Amino acid sequence: MRKKRAVVFCGTSNFAFAMASVIMDLKRVSPGIADEIVIIHDGKMLDKDKQIIASLWTTRFIDYAFPFTDLPVFNQGFFNYFTKMVCAKFECLRLLQDYATVLFTDYDIVITKDISELMAPCDSGIRMIPYPGSYKVASQLLEPYRNLSIEDYDLQAQGFCAATFVFQDHLNDYMKMYSFCYSTLKKYASFLYMPEQAVFDFMIQRFQLVVDSLDPAVYIPHPDDRSKHAQAKILHAYGNLKFWNGIKNEQWQKNYSEWLKMGGSRYTPTHNGVKDRLAHFMTRFRYHLKRRRRFNAS
Image 1 (cartoon, rainbow, N blue to C red):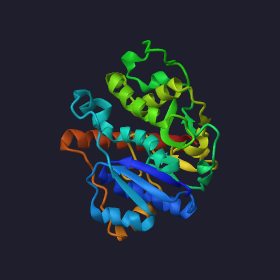
Image 2 (cartoon, one colour; image 1 turned 135 degrees about the vertical axis):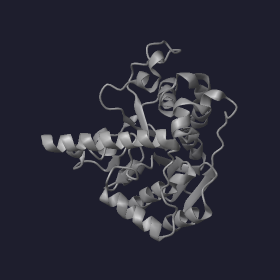
Image 3 (spheres, rainbow, N blue to C red; image 1 turned 90 degrees about the vertical axis):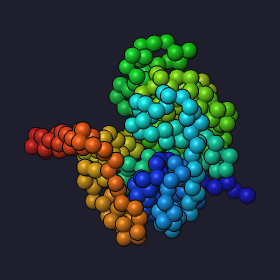
Image 4 (cartoon, rainbow, N blue to C red; image 1 turned 60 degrees about the vertical axis):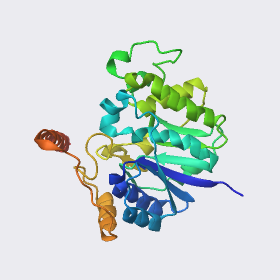
């Protein structure tokens, strides 16, 4: 029996609407890309949201149990800001027991063109996006640790982005890699700025993987980088502002409106207190000021 192909998302349950938007994009531009959607979540997703998502695509929901809840380092810094759900990306390796190909993507994206080619077989069994520019493995670490020597890892090597990647089941020793990711996360947690990306970079070096590189100009440009829109297939709203809290995108807004019509849960801002609301306002203000200056300059 043929193993299935899956598209995987992971995140806290209050972002069901954002995952649904990406699924709507896939249904429109890449309807044959996967047999199933897999959503790894925090165990709090509402039944009504699950039912709506399952009506869009055959979906498997997995409650994520983070293994290191007793360690204080995982309740501060990056882990507190983005939540420990970013580490659920490691589960994509374990999912290779059930799926021939696993395509992971973040949910703060808009898919504009068919991306079915990401599911095509590749010899290495791994596809990732190399960070553009001068981003190295060291960039995934906190500033005080970027010039340290960490085991035999080359911190000046090319770093990879974990926003969109592909694993395939002929990737040798994928369960050893799975165990490696969590043990390395625990070992170096206090060093890490982008924890899951740093751990994946260490994994690539430790297991001497040859990564099939995905073009950053195609799979990761920011919505504001209009110079790349013609060739882009995915627009990724990385950074503080997203499609739901400041970045305007007609396609995303149409998906969100459809989600609400289906009875899905609304986006609810998580800002608590005057200080957080003021910080968010200033972020939006600077963002739109930058856009206006760029427009006037052109």
